[in-house]
Image 1: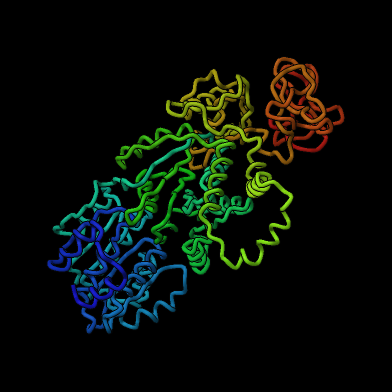
Image 2: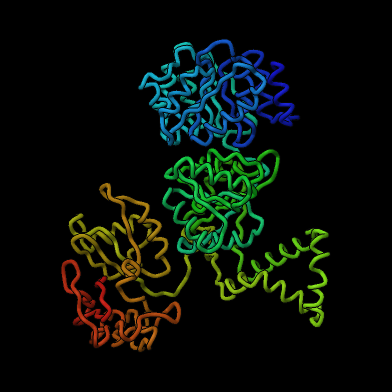
Amino acid sequence: MRAELTRAVTEMGFETPTPIQQLVIPHLISSPADIIGLAQTGTGKTAAFGLPLLHHTDVSVKHVQGLILSPTRELCMQIQVELAKYGQYMPGLRTCAVYGGVPITNQIREVKTNPQIIVATPGRLIDLLERKAISLDHVEYVVLDEADEMLNMGFREDIDFILGTTPMRKYTWLFSATMSNEVRGIAKRFMTKWEEFSVAAANATNENIDHQYYVTQHRNRFETLQRLLDFTPGIYGIIFTRTRQDCQDISEKLMKQGYHVSPLHGDMDQKMRSKVLERFKNRTLQAIVATDVAARGIDVNDITHVINYELPDDPEVYTHRSGRTARAGKSGICISIVSPKEVGSIRTIERIVKNKFNKCDIPDGAEIVRKRLFHFLEQIENVQPESEFADVYLNMIHEKFETMEKDELIKRLIFLQLQETIQTYQKSHDLNAVGGDGKNAGVAVRGAVWTRMFLNIGQKDGFNEASLTQFICDQTDLKPEVLDRVTVRDLSSFYNVKTDVVDLIIESISSKKFKGRKLRTEEADKKDASRGPSRGGYGGGRPGGDRSGGGRSYGGGDRGGRGYGGDRGNSERSGGGRSYGGDRPSGGERGGYFKSRDEKAGRSSGAGRGDSYRGGGRSRD
C-alpha cells in the first residue's frame, strides 16, 4: 500500500485490521479483480474498499476514476469523510459526495472541480447524468456498498442504468451484509468472473449480540418500550420503526414523557438529520427513533441496544438492524417487541441469522425500581467529587442535616432520586402476554365475553352476513363460533367477537387488503371514542352506577352493564350502554336519538329503540 495511506491509517490509530479488511485489502491492492465482500454492518467495509481504491487512483488525472454507490445520504457523506482521512497525505486527490435532500446546483459546481472519486446515492447520480453534469466514461472502479440495502430500497433499475454508463469499467467491488438472490443476480449481470470473500456465514449475525424478545399484546407495545427503557438506565441505542409516521409519533410520545430521544427519518431535512446525529454521537440523546433507511448513516461503535419496536417486514432487514450494536468487537443487545402472533416470525429470523433468541419477561414495576436503585447506588459509589465542592459546601451540608440520622438522610435522598419512577410503577400491571410460544397463544384472557367490532367493508363490497362471517374466519383461521350478531351495512359492518381473540383479529385483518383497499377493523366503541360512550361491562340487569353506567347488557338487562375494566365508564348523564334482548332502551332517559349513515342510531338487537345518550355521538350498531 502506498506510503501516504500507511501514514494516514497509522496516525488514525489503526493497528489490527478487521477480518474483512485482512481478506480483501491485500488482494485488491496486489491483484485487483471483481469481488463480492460479505460482512456484517460495522466490520470496517469502508476501509476494505476505500484503501485499495485510493491506492489505485492516479491523482494526476483530472476525471472520475472511481465510483462508490451507497443507499443513503448519511452513508454517502460518511464514506467521503473516511476517504478524505485516508487520503489526507495524497496531494491532488479530490473526492466528491452527491446525494439528495440538498440543492443540486451546489453539487454540480463541486462535480465540475474534476474529482477522481465520486460517492453517490443512485437517485442523485442519475439526476446529474441526465443533466449531463457528470461523465462516467472513464470510471474504472465501481463499488456497490450495502448492495442488499440498495436493492431492498428499490434501486435495482437505477443500479443497472448506472453500471450501463461506465463503458471503461474494469472492476466491480460489491459489498453486502447479507447474500440474497438479488445481490447474486447483480453479480451475474455485471461481473464475468468474481471472487467471494466472506467473514461469516451468509446472513449470520454477530456472535457478540444477545438477541432477546418480549411478547405482549399489540396495544401494550408502547408501554412495553417505556418499561424496557426504564429498566436500562444506561441505554445508548436505536429504536427501529417500520414507517416514518411511527418514527415521528413514538419519538414525540417519548419526549413528552421526559425521555432524551429524537426521531431520524427521511421526511426531515438534511440539516435537522445532521443535528440529530451529532447530538446522538455526543450522547446528548440516550436513543434515537429511526427508520431503516435513515439509520444506514449512523457510524457509532458504542451502541449498547437495538430495539425493534416492530419486526421488519423482510426478515433479512433484521440483520442490518442488529448489526448497529456489538461493533468493533464489543457486545450488544438486540431486543424485539412482538405480539403473540409474531412469535412465528422470530423463529423464521432465527433460522435466517443462525442464532437462538432468548424469550424474556417484561419487567414489572418492582424490578424497574430495584434496577434504577442499583444504578443510582453505583453512580454514587463511582463518582469522585471535586475537592473545591467539599471545601465550599461541606460545612453547610453538615449544619443543615446535623440533627438528621444518617439512615434517614440516605432514605430521603434515594426516594428523591427515584420518586418519579416509584409513582409511575406503583400500580403497574403485567404486560406479558399469556403463553407466547404456541400457535395463537398469548391472547390475554379477559373472560368469555363479547366485544362489538367495526370493519370498513360492507354490502357495496358484495358482502352479506354469511359471506362476511366466512371472510373474517378465512383471514384469521378462527371458527364461526367466535363470531355473533354480524350486521352488514352499505359501507361498513359490525360484528360481535369473543373478547379473548380481539387482538388476534385486529392484527390479522388490519394487515390485509381487499380490492386494493386496506382493511381496518377495531373495537366499535373505540372508533369514535370522543363522541361515543366509554365501554362498560357485559353483565345484564345490574345498574352501571354514577361513573360506570356505560356498557352492553346481554341477556335482557334493563340498564347498562357494569364497567369491566376499571372504575370509569359512562356517566349517568351520558347514557347507558346498549341492550341486546332487553325490553327497554339502554340509554339514559334524558338522552336524544341520533342518526347514523343509513338508519336511526342504536337499533337494539332484539328490542325496541337502542342507544341514546345526551352528550351526542353516533350509533355503532
